[in-house]
Amino acid sequence: STTSSPTMPSLPFYNDTNTVTSFADGLRSLASHDHPVFVPRTVDENLLYTIGLGLISCPGQSCGGPNGSRFAASMNNISFVLPTSFSILQAQQLGKKGVFTTDFPDNPPLQFDYTAQNISTALSSPVKDTRVK
Image: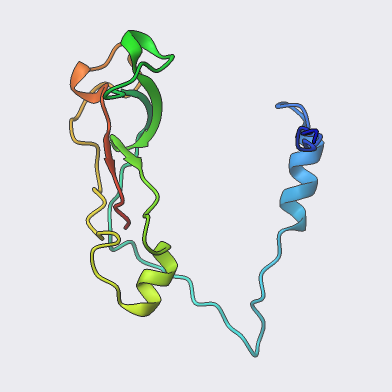
């Protein structure tokens, strides 16, 4: 038995503005006179999201990141964890409790200079969680 690698898509270059414009121009809504889409005209929530790359420890094993850890992307210092029992959509539709929480933070856990090269080490280890907004 032989294994083969999956076929990978051919992606455009990062600076290919013609492809980006063509894609964006092709986005359409189902909104119509018969199916109106109402967009809120006033802001009722203020949100500030930061995207980061942190380190998560690997208990009982050594991972390839710094100090035997592994890299983890995060938003507002929360690294998303997939639920194991139900999908989030399924849990929402079935009213299942304990699959996710709705307390995703509106702001990062600490205020800091968002353009600085170095930030607080308190933000270097994101929390692994299944929170949504």
